[in-house]
Length: 117
Image (tube, rainbow, N blue to C red; front, side, top):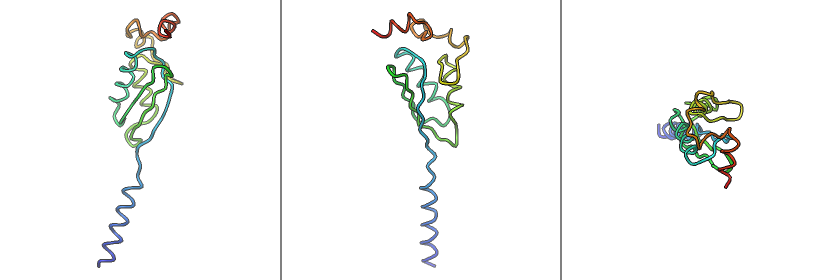
């Protein structure tokens, strides 16, 4: 009886620890400032299954940790473009983009150049 119990505990423990459902991704997201950073990260965090999101203002790289049983890359991208930011392979609608603050209009070359300083 003890042997069976030990084997069962071992099997349950092994199965429980082998299911790593967290995935990591990195993608480019357009933006220019700290307001963009807050908006992009908040949109990601509000997406069910996203555990962390960090966007780098200088490199435009977004790093996300998410539960792949609850969400996926496409859903995360949809959340980002919904708040007005373009991602690789998915562009924000003009309506969403036009709602951005004037300083966040990353498609405007003048605004991009202003943020380089």
